[in-house]
Figure 1 (cartoon, rainbow, N blue to C red):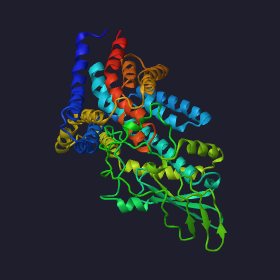
Figure 2 (figure 1 turned 180 degrees about the horizontal axis):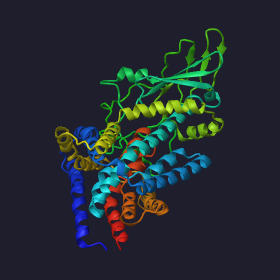
Figure 3 (figure 1 turned 90 degrees about the vertical axis):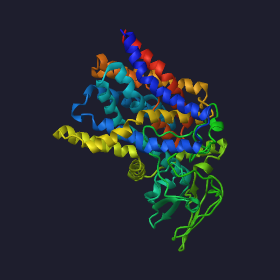
Figure 4 (figure 1 turned 120 degrees about the vertical axis):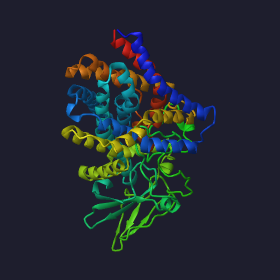
Length: 508
């Protein structure tokens, strides 16, 4: 039975975090203290320093040789069941987009920022170790898997757009320039195709010359994708290679502001029409393009003419490709029934290169790996962290939780609507997040024999609000960002009473 003191301890742990979020919200929405540019600066500090250092602090102090096997197994089993079930559905229905979104909503909560202080107040200090173990698995395994799915989707759309029909089957090699860090389309991309004497196609992917010409500042970087990477959902509607599902409420009205929370260089408008311009042709022949979304290409070799009507070369930009009408999109989907893809190894190499480049630009990757490495050394040979390093880390990590919640408040204040995806879709996503997730975790926990306080902690952590990283991915790749942003914003408001309800019911 939950006593009044227990309830008070939970509130003492959570109210300060929500107060930081409320102050940030009021500072932008009501008091006008911070501008969008200033919010971006605060977010950069949180994303690049505060949260990665906070993550390193917790991971480095957790003993990896005393992992709770049943707890980890229950969490892994629940996520695996969801992924396998959605994969089967995806194979049958061809709904890769919804596989990614539903997996994100149902299985990836905000464990670091919300889970550690909440579970510690509810069930004691032992839950901190459990939550840290989940954070490590999320950062190293589940977020990497999610990134893999997003890059696979982006690569598939690229190939379907550039090489419709059977042409893609002849692709044997992708060459990606070093300054291309992702296929997410944050910068326009250009593909160049070369066909050898055996009919095999070699494809080079590089940044558009228009992007390079108008770029100011350093080479664009991938967002850090850390646990507090908050973006404004002010993303244009046409943010995608091809044809992503349109939300029931039509979220275009909420996607026109600047990218105040991006770690990319300052966003710039493009005066260059990627679809109507001509690109430099490969040295082996000339390429002629039509200024239309579905580009036909004629390859003229210096020796003899070869026509590859289905092979395309053009600049790829989410800003332009999204302008294709729904009718055109439907026609293209119908013609893609006979779409062939490159060999599995060719696709795998392309995706792994892109995933690797994204991870190498993610500060949270380094904090997780360094924290885990130090904990392995420290607890193996009983080596303590030098005081100089320990207190340097502590002074930044102490600000991590509060600043992460402050960033969430800024993020909420910059949005035109708290529920961007419409009431119906928001209701469905909340049911999946706060009912479906805990139910699946409960079933998986019983299956592996988890009982007592560990079972209760597993269920409550599954009812935490939507994680930030899935929304960052969704926003960058143009896949249902309205649904994920609603999960982050509205989920933060709903999660406290929901988790308290689970806490009371499990304590009866």
